Image (cartoon, rainbow, N blue to C red; front, side, top):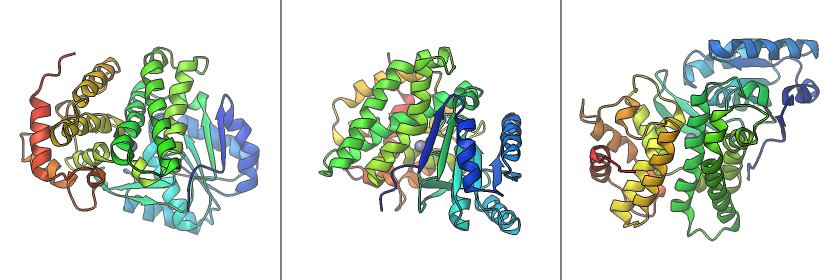
Length: 363
Ligand SMILES: [Zn+2]
């Protein structure tokens, strides 16, 4: 089955108000799920608007990352309150939790991203973590969300770091899909790869202008927000599994195992993962252009204040056998690293990261 897109997408100014009549047709007693204190006032607005439209929501917050404990607890609350839909309003982990909950309960999910940090509002995928944020697995759901509401006035309030993190995550679409699927003869896969290249180029062009003025009046900002929240999801929807992830996300998943102190955002880790993937391509696959790509990306990421080394993510690879731990988790049997068109063993990861972290990349 192809899970290409949400059934309905509302985007732009006042998208939330425009979506309300549709939402009130779909649900009368939803669970409104959120997380951070900083977005509590937005969820309050959402709750009030739902009330005015005769939708009686109960509210709950995610206590940890999207983990089994949270999901079990929320599943019980939703069941005992006879919730007929989940409205997930927040960042990637809240959106993932909302989608997985709705999937377990066989009720519709409405996603309301409150930042442009991921395409989780669009996709039929969810990541499960431990309570401490260590990646466990991703799961494919039965459908994309019923309704996605991308309201600029909500997104505009999010910290800049969520946008830059989302940019790095969106860039990964091109770097991961082009290496894993370039020889795939499926037309849809090829088209998805080309969309990811156009998205990358657009992010190169628009990101700095977007960050300088995060406003719905700024076309560059709108392009970046929509690229991160919509197009990145569409690429995975059209291209399928192999268009989604490869080494950059495999390395992300491994780095989360070490519980970095400052808890970098998903895309911040993925961005470093892209650079390590390119280094791996250079060393293992004799990719002559990889070094050029690394220089181009590092330059871009530095302008956006994104981390460009594992050290900058708050992890000393030489401490506590960390490098070996990253290498072993990256190469575990079920890892996406094995989608690469060349074999990768833990020693290759150790070698690549050692070179990468000790190298001063000159711009
Ligand atoms: Zn990602």
